[in-house]
Length: 454
Image (cartoon, one colour):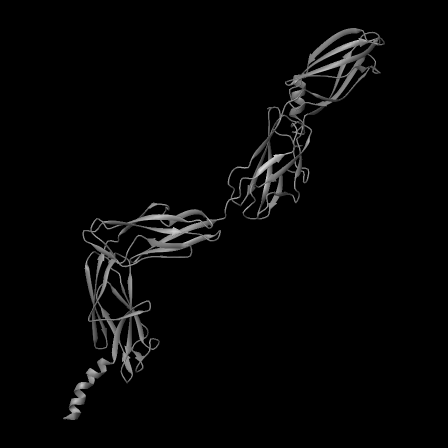
């Protein structure tokens, strides 16, 4: 009779060896005969980890089966051996995933040897998440945020189901992102109800950050970019004195208050002529490299940038009326536009040299070399005198077409010119002693000194 009693109690003893827990992080809870998965958004998955211990004094061989629509089982190879008085590392761990596809109630039978657990859950339409301020896009983008500053995005979570739903998870993950602020878990949303909460982005480096916002079984992307503090708007300054053609000027670049970061880039020149006769002036360049861009560098905390390694950069103003524009290009953020303009005004013709000759039989030849930064020279007036300085005659001519044709073919090499004007003479030229030439352009008149014929 004792033997029979021992045999009758053996299945009960074997069953008592196994204890089933649900596991959430480091928390273990004994699973009863019924386990609720809760409400899960349609077509998303909620996974539950179970752990089976053997608390008995003899080994156990464990099998697990699951039956029920919407539920799926993931286990190690079965049957799974568990030693007596097992630890967590020796226990059987397996996962049940619940993925509802319709708004309905679901159930499944989970069998662990002779232990039965009924799993229940329901599918609900997912609560709708929207950003109301501070970020945008399907991957909620916080945009560019200065390192050390913060930016908050406000969210609204709405329940459009005809019944209340519970959101068991509302968490933010990812370096640089914190929150949510304003949502208390577990969060129950009545039908038609919305709640608000916020997530904060606080970059600590000038890099792109990515995170996630988990709402129940849904996961949403968060992104933002940390940017360095902008460099105060650089100040481009020229040496003192009025601007004019044919100058060599000096440029400096200062950073008010000092640059918060080290930076490099280029200072660039562009030229816009005031005349349509030419499109450019190739003589307008930096002297250091004969080009219109020069590298700059500035150290963190420095108030002055180095231009091609120097404290200033010399440049030529060319020989053309117009505007030289200076800009700064850099990959670093600037607080404002640092462009500067140097206006080269139009002037009357600059006469570099002039001479008169009557050495050629039957002609009076006058040669003039100069520059016209307005490209508008044309009219010339000639006053002839005898050897004693007494006026003989005057003459004038308009050479506008000849000048324009000449400058159109010099390929923006500048406004310099050299002209020879010849007057045919009948009879003796012995009494012709000198001539004065006046050239007129859009800025005024310029006259030669008295040119003696030789």
